[in-house]
Length: 237
Image (cartoon, rainbow, N blue to C red; front, side, top):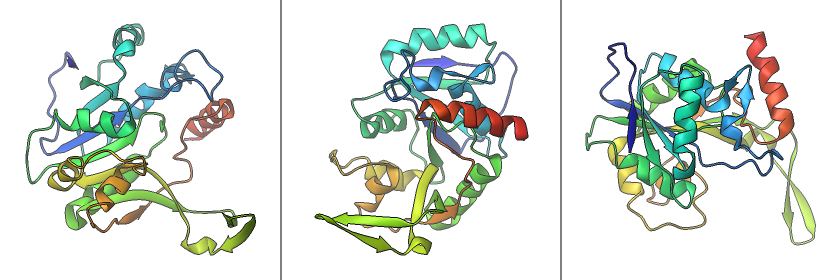
């Protein structure tokens, strides 16, 4: 585990944490460089994501989960871009589940703590969404950011497709924020391939998942065109 600290003294919220999961590769981006390191308006995507959480009112302590092979590269990027936002760096696991679990090990047991888990490649997450998720999780145990589908949805059953009610379909985003005891207990479960995100892990315990309104601009960088879209959205802010 590596810890990168800001040279300036700072006080972060001692009960709020954010685990930034950066385990992606460049496969679908057709890039030799993992997508979290691609430049977005001159700065690596991952740095934009960390900045979003750093700048929000919740002021969480930041934990970055990154494959061991890229720790040195990340340190070089931080030096190159004069990136001094304090964060702890931990090695990722075999799957997203194992990566989050590794991040959780850095967080001391505290019933009052709140933990947000964020995709590293969502660089446009608005501070209002981040803060809303923390506040909602305080009252309700968890808060998962999602938006209503704008498109018509059909489900394939065998060789037949059936229409689903669009108003009841939500597209899940991150952050996904939980009370610490709830999330840590969930991640004590054995890994299963059906665990696609943190909500699915917590839901496996029979816990109700609460949705909070997200933002359609909170896109996930997955394909080459997403970088161009994100650059336009950043310039419009």
